[in-house]
Image (cartoon, rainbow, N blue to C red; front, side, top):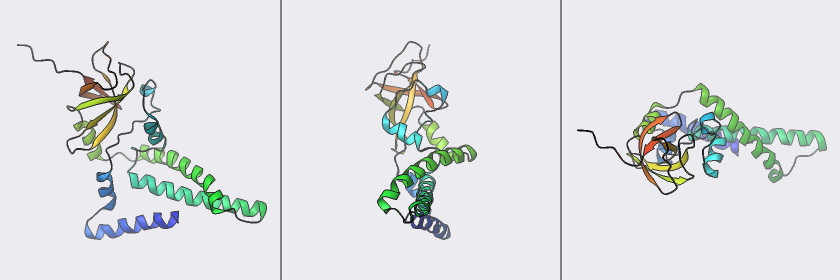
Length: 207
């Protein structure tokens, strides 16, 4: 079934090229703008993030389009399932129950999605529109939702872009000695790799 779904996605994408409509692009546009930073990056060692961000980062979400990760997961699940059943038949002479075989197949698919997603994400550059969307967040307001933000220790925050899509980001104060707690509303002034810089208020120009 996983292989059938994976092949169906490919067929739909190929047929959509004939009419100029991309289902994958529509799905990407409908999904929340979840920017998931690479939590294994050295500069994020002190970041306080929620379990959802950890799970999404582990599965390489944000490195590749959603449908690409889905295809990797389905392919990994199918191949892992066939390998498990082949090994079971060779060892005990009969195939395992599908429900029992699905457990190691899910584990194999998860690791395939993580490692292959990270590898392909390093090879293929990210979409330019995605990079532009991240830059568009500068100049908007964000609300701290988890942790305490200080320089060198980013916290998790939520913001909205010009299209109304919600983004979950990591930010730290732009001013030394400043800290932000959960619930604080700040203004995004810049971005350094995965971390946004923020201030609480704009300084009026000197006359």
